[in-house]
Amino acid sequence: MFRAFRFIVDLFTQRHGIIAFVFFLLVGLLMRQAPNFVKENIVSSILGTVLYPAQMAISSLDAYRSVVAENEQLKQENARLRQETYYASEGLQELTRLHALVRFDDKWGYPIVTARVVGHNPGRFLTTMIINRGTHHGVKENMPVFSMNGLVGKVTKVSYGYARVQLLVDPNLKLSVLERRTRVVGFLESVDGHMLMAMVPTHAGVKAGDTLITSGLGGIFPKGIPVGTVSAVREADLDVMRQMYVVPFQEFSTLEEVFVMEKEPDWIIQELLDD
Amino acid sequence: MTSLKWLKLLFLYILAFVLQTTVGDWLQIFGIGPDFVIILIVGIAIKHGPATGCFWGFLAGFTQDIYAPVEWLGAHTIAMTIVGFLVGQLEERFLTLNLPAKMAVLAIGFFVCDMIYFLLTGLEKDVVTNLFFSKTLPECAYTVIVGAVVFYLSAGKAGKKKRSV
Image 1: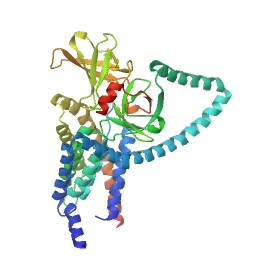
Image 2 (image 1 turned 90 degrees about the vertical axis):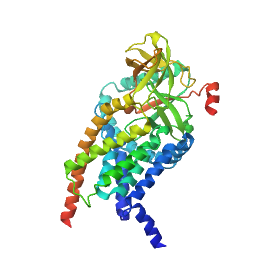
Image 3 (image 1 turned 135 degrees about the vertical axis):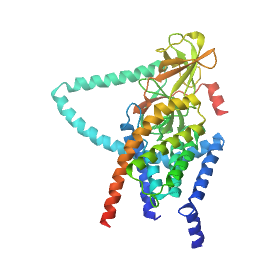
Image 4 (image 1 turned 90 degrees about the horizontal axis):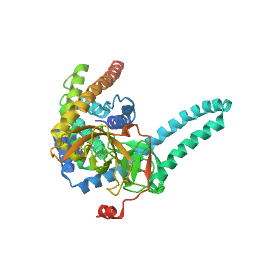
């Protein structure tokens, strides 16, 4: 029995490295060839059982460290502000912050949930991130996520206390956009997980420097959320459409806080999603 | 390999991902940052050989794949497994690599990993060319510099251990 176990261990370790290599390569190839729903199941089960709790623990440690630093900073600030106009300046800051939130709230008429970014994918191409709000706080799948600067993405997976956000640079996220000056509608996507590309009809005359906002036509994002600016226009394969590079208003790698708009997809889109 | 060494590698594996998501962000210059995960895989493969290299390459690649778009699942896994196995052929038991040689191996490993990844994700040729010059090339240079520091420090630690024995 022990010999048999030892033999299997040896197969995968020192004596026969090639067997281990072929085995792992085959597992990788099987995953690569698997249908998308199988891939989604693999990812969901690993995230739910291992990675979310681990990231939550790391994030809690980080939060504790920042609380200690913040505490020290606040003590110093407190002493200074006591000598100055403490109440006035504090009240003004709070008013400004609340005013900004209320403006966002009023504009679209949906409640907003504030969330902290607690993790993101560890690869070099940032396509998803984890936020510390979930079903417990009213967050559901396909709700739009944005920051003060502009659109960030949408919620794709939700659990009790946290949710996964698909960023605009995720190649699987495609959205309908509207150019603010010409009012022409196009669509935005990322083909490589790094750059954003928009496809707009040639006749519209969209040029570098123009601004893109959400068109509201996709049924998931409401109309008017700022998305980004056109940085360059390039010739497309089709004469009727122009491809253009887009720089998003929000730099995703520096995101610390985001807002989730409690807007569920329009009923027709919801039906398509459910199908 | 003893259980203690497995635990040590597990600790380094977790550390690499923690560094990647924390220090990796802080060290970014114009959006270009070092890749601690490939440094770990190359380091493990050189030290412990192809079997261990491809196992940890598989694990690290799979972890990165979990967060990548679902359609690309398996691309990092395959790329990292191959790099772990290939670099493992230069195992320290049979070959002695000095620091510049390790840096060269790290650079080649980085390129091979990215090339396999681009190939498997099926990106267009002009997109790959753009990514190669805007991401792969500068990040490879940055990773090699950070890797040199890591290899230098780990070699110094190993040297001290040998002297004390």
